[in-house]
Amino acid sequence: STPPSVVKRRKPSSVTSVGHAAFRGCKALEACNLSGVTEVGSLSFSGTALAEANLASALSVGDEAFAGDSALATLDLSSVCKIGEKSFGGCSSLGTVCLPATLTDLGLDAFAGAARAFEVDAANPSLSASGGILYSKDGSELLFVPSQMEFPDGTLEVAATVRSIAAHAASGQANIVR
Image (cartoon, rainbow, N blue to C red; front, side, top):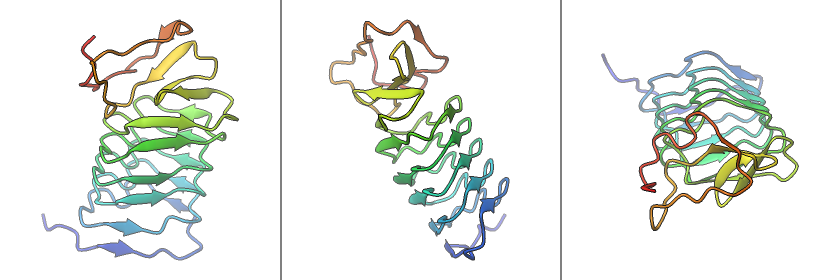
């Protein structure tokens, strides 16, 4: 098939949602103004060349919305309430991901294969971060170890407050050896 020729996309200011798989596989799509968009559907931008995603107005990001976007390095999630499963899976250029106070629904493997560290707004009612690792607010559950996080001696130290480790918590983390 012929690769899409779309490189940059300007959206009208009236656009508030991007539907399921709207730009999926547009490998040449490098930039898209998402300001004002409140809902990003599943698979909307998966497989694109986006380097940044300004989702400051987004309340919901669907499953696999940006999956496989390895060039995605900058992310603004300042208003998001829900991030679906594998939404940013494979976004290996992401550095530190800042999660807002508004985020209350985080899907399984939302950042699998992505991110080097997490920071969480202290006002978030259900999440916290320590040492770049994502935990439940009270620290009793280890939720996610960023797959791009490095451990100099290969050791993941689990805090004494941790009582459970979530499904897929360290899935794909190649730097833990003990």
